Length: 184
Image (tube, rainbow, N blue to C red; front, side, top):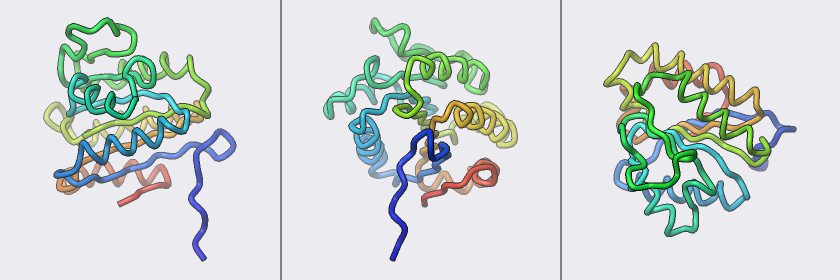
């Protein structure tokens, strides 16, 4: 008999989840995961190293998830994610994709407004940050962010496309070494 799936809450310390999605169904699988999380009355922060705000907002809107109300969006690569948007507080861009302190500042500012039992953080396609720095620097920065969110009692999900995992081995192994959930 298998053990029942645990949900995350403050009583069950938050976890780091590393989830590979197929490249062909990436947006579909990502949307399903966000729908599942948000429909459990959870709100959170999406940090994207791949998808632009408009791209993901359109897909999420089809499921009733709204950037600005249900999730904050941090665009870590594109300089102008919220063009034409009135969502200045919930759609931000990061000047330097490896500015982990600034990324965490936005994450923590938003999470402080939420009950930690109903919050989450999702980092999409950290692989793309390799264009800006080394895997060691990314691993250290993401571990630092994961530790801070863990201290807040908030789970963090790292989502990546299958096929990127070879280049991500160093980052993923360091993250999983410090945490306990790798789904793949």
